[in-house]
Amino acid sequence: MYGFSTFLPSILRSDLGYTSLQAQYLTVPCYMFSGIVFILAARISDKTRIRGPLIIFLDMFGVVGYALILGNTSSGVKYFACYLICMCLYVPGLNEAWLATNLAPRFKRAIGLGINQTLGNIAGVVSAQIYREPPKYVLGHAFTLGCIGMGIVCSGLNTFLLVRRNKANIKACETGVDARGLTREIGDDSIEFRFVT
Image 1 (cartoon, helix red, strand yellow):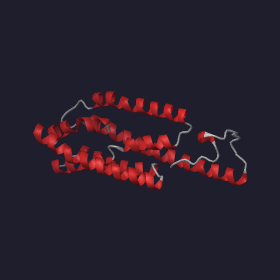
Image 2 (image 1 turned 45 degrees about the vertical axis):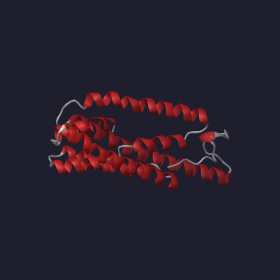
Image 3 (image 1 turned 120 degrees about the vertical axis):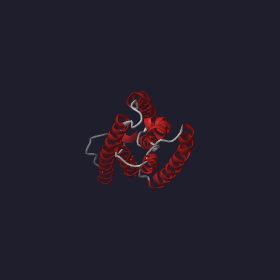
Image 4 (image 1 turned 30 degrees about the horizontal axis):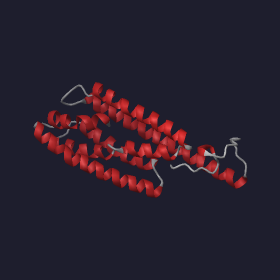
């Protein structure tokens, strides 16, 4: 998604045929829409304590958007696809919140978030290498579509594993027996810890 947000003016100008000035203006509604979607998603996510299914839901819009952009469609449809892609543009913010709420104690959270930020910022280097073929940017779009697909699979798997772990923790609290043999009573290894799914 790093590449899309960086190259959106170029995508609008070269692939959709707008002038440079028009392309700059047309990015504003996309980014505003993306910001509104992110604020709503963050509020829903915090209220329900559900992250994974919401991330998957928003990423599905990105899949449809990239499929439309990669297909031979009109400029209007491709511009609409940009809005669909923007719905998942700031999903990494939910990923960070998901990671932060599921890591404890503080030192583990700090290390996990640091690694997450480092790996996330590598996307800037990668996007500069894959978005090299104007006007269609097929490689960049296809690569990003694949990454979104991988993100959907990983989010689904993570949600499944966290739900299973929560059930094991609940059972251990009820029976007093921890099947994992853990004796730690702090952090996310504690049987009283509940993961946000």
